[in-house]
Image (cartoon, rainbow, N blue to C red; front, top):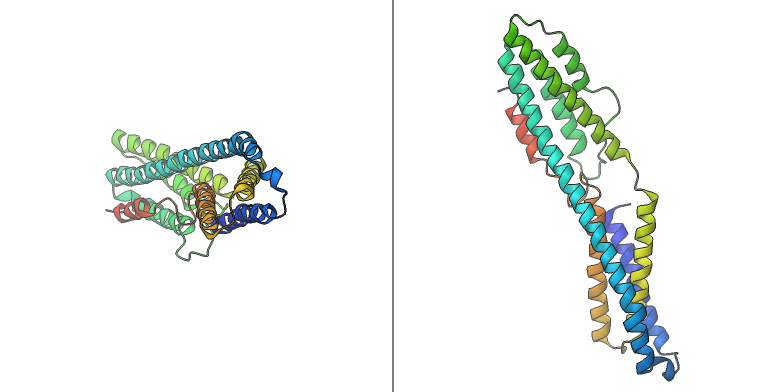
Length: 255
């Protein structure tokens, strides 16, 4: 389910709760809408739920933002390691031309899978052995002629192993499903905000100004849910990890 779909569903529930409150207000006896009742509901029930919902939503967004930032940093470091591996192979000598071409091919394939040109195409790293794993075999087959080449081969092998490990880590992360506790918390948040806006509509005067304010407020809340889902999908959607570092890496390979 896309981030926009989730935010629209959240908007429908919350704004629907506000409209339901405005509708039920016309049927309630006057003493149910007294000043004492309004103070009790707003100061204790609605106020507490609004604070709790805003606090939990803020914590979830902060955690998602930290995770997004960490994955972006991982991509930056991965790009740097790829370039460093290519330079190590270049310093080894002309015997590594086939290995360097294989490295470029592997990076290009990974970029196409993680940042597909077609927006509708899902991000999907396949589970088949990649060119990076073949690259390790090719590096091991190198025959060093001196101690310098031996050291460069060992260093290249170490970097290649790190790249393969990172690739499988990215594969595991992109196939994982959204955890059930996270979905439960999201459901509770929607329920809390719906209840809060129901209370707003129940005790607010029914006029166009109130409806417009409730509408705009609901848009802001649903936008926060949109942001939360987007940050939890770092390679998809409107807010995603940029492709530029990997493109720049591809341009540097083979030089």
